[in-house]
Image (cartoon, rainbow, N blue to C red; front, side, top):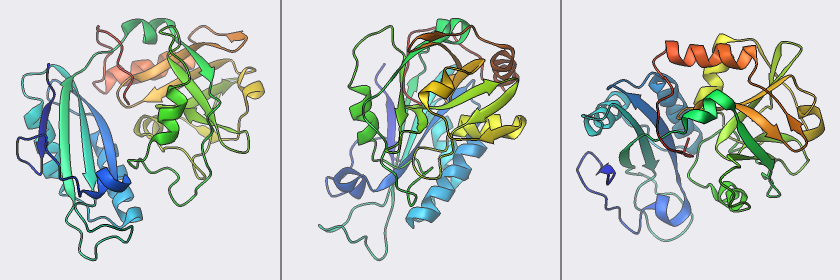
Length: 278
C-alpha cells in the first residue's frame, strides 16, 4: 500500500527543496502507532514534540490538529504507523535560521507490519562499530539528523539480527539504533541515561512512569551480566533480547509484565512481517 501523506494538512507528498528539513535536517519527528483509531502513547509523543520545539526554537504546532490529521489518514486501517515530521520550514541559503519561521508539518501513514515472533521469543542484537557523538544540546531530542543510526544500521545485512546496540564515544552503551535499552539486575530495572546523546524514547518514558528505573551507565560486559535485557519502541513495543555477543536469555518476568502493560493500554502485538521503524 502506498503511504497516505499530507503536508500542511493538504493531501500531497511534495515538500519544497528549500525546506530546512531537507537541506539541514532542521526539524523533529515522531513515529506513532495507531490501533483502531487510537494512539495510546500520543500524549507522550506530543509532550516530546513540544519539548523538542522549545529546545530547537521551532514554533510548536497545534497538537490536537496534528492528532486529528494523523487519525484522518489512518481511517480504515486497524493497525497503522504514522510518522509526523515537523521542520523549521523553507528558508534562504545558509545556516542562520529565519527570524520568523513558518514550519512545515508532514504526516505519512502506512499499515503496520510487525514480526510477532520478536515479542514472543526475543531478538538477536549485535554491537555496532559506529558510535554516538556526545552533544548535550541535542541529547534526548528526536531530531531529523539520523546519520549515525543510518551508518550503524548499514553495518549488517543479516535478517537474523534485529538490532544493533550503540556506544557513545566514551564506550558507554546508550541505545539500539531505533530503540532504547533496558536491563534487569536482581529484579531492578536499569537504563542508560540520554542526557549526553541518544533519544529519550516515548516507550522508555512509559516504562519509567510505571516502574522504578535507575539510570546508570552500562558497558557490554555489564550488560551480559544482566538477568533480563529488552528494548523499547513506541511502534514495536517491548522486545526481549534473546542473544547478545556470547550471552543468551529467555524473556523474563519483568519483560513479560511490561508486555502485558502494553496490551492493557491498547498496544497488542499484531501478526505480520518485520517493521524496524520506531
